[in-house]
Structures are given as structure tokens and as C-alpha cells.
Image (cartoon, rainbow, N blue to C red; front, side):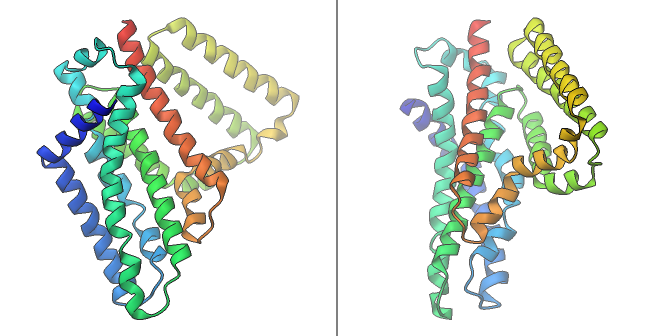
Length: 287
């Protein structure tokens, strides 16, 4: 894992990708820092962090689009697949490489609240709680980006798909609010969601029996539950979107609240998508 970590980190800093990512990241945050804190002389750095959470949607695809897709295209992934390194070590090495770049940026912006000491008392608790949430949110987006990059051989396709998925997560709450909350709509929605999950599973495993079997069991279970008690589906879409929304969970950090449930949520998102990326690599080894 360490060798892969060093190789990936070296790749980002021997090309322009790592430098462009850091430069754009700091430029956007610096711009908002100036407008929200320096010009107004407000000491609350969490205002800036709350306003720049969209930055991951724009810049993470730039960082993760090549991490798996480029190796798939050039067939250099075959060297990794035939090496004694485990699939989990491959994924973890790549993740820690991109996460290190995010840590570098986060370490720099951690000095910004100290700059505001000249304007008076700074609420360090809420400022650094928001920075912690910002780092966890970035880690979750990086894990998702790695998984999406592993599904294709094209960097452009990986970047576009990643951007679309991230853009969707940014507006999950608004989308959920615009969807009907009645139980019939919820049943149809969860049925379509189950089919999408089965399709993704088929892409990863190329096992039609498992995919169809899971779809039949899932849709059958949803139908049975609906027939037993349809009121369980009332408002279920809004509840699901609110629970899954990564940006909504960030609001607690922004307000200076360190909730263990939110920390576990982000760590779980990272684990799930790294696990899925590992399964993609294992599937290639089996084939």
C-alpha cells in the first residue's frame, strides 16, 4: 500500500493536476474568506466554510478522474492485478494519496481563523468544527470519485459522471422537497432505486443471476411491505434523502456541533465507496 501511495502522490506533483487543484482550491476559499471575513471584519470563519462546500463538486472530479480510469485505459492496471498487493491495499493507497492533497489544503486554511484575531475574539470551536466537517465531507467525495473512476476507462467520462453525481448530492434536499410524499410515489421511487442498484451490481459483477435475484427479492419485499402497511411509505423519500444528504449533515459542523452520528456517517460513506472500488478490482482479477 505504501508503494502505491507514494507512486500516486508523486504522480500528482510531477504533473500539473495536484498544483492546479491546490491553487484553485485556495483561490476560491481565499476569495470567499476576503468577502465574508476580511471585508466585513466578521470573525466567524465558519461563514466562509459553509459558503464554499460546493467546491468539492467542482474540483474533486479533477483530482479523481484519472486515478483509476487512466490505468484502465492504458492497461497498466494489469500490473497491479497480477502483483501480490491486495485489492484493498490498492484502493487505500490511492485514496490516501488524494486525501493527503486535501489535508495539505486543509492545513493551510486552518491558519485563516488565526489571521482574524486582529479583529477581536474568534469563535475557534465553531471555526475548527466546521473545518473538521469540511475535511470529512471532502473525504466522502474523494471516495465516491475513486469508485466512479473505477467504472470507466475514460477520464472525461469519469469526470462528467462524477460531476453529475456530486451535483445531485448538492441539491438532494431540494429535490426531495419537490417530490410527492404519498405512499404510491414512494413505492415507485424505491422500486426504480432497487433496479438501479441491481444494474450497478451487474456492471460490477457481470452476474445476471445475482442481479435479477436481488431485484426480485427487493421489489417483492417492497411490494409485500406496501400491501401490509402502505402508510410506512408516506414521506419516506424525504426522510431517505435527508438522511443520505452529505451537505445537510455538514450543517451541524457549521454550527459548531460535533455529533458522533455525523462523524460516523461520513466515515461510513468513505468505507462503503472504498469497499465498492475494491470489489470492482477484485472482479477484474476474477475475470
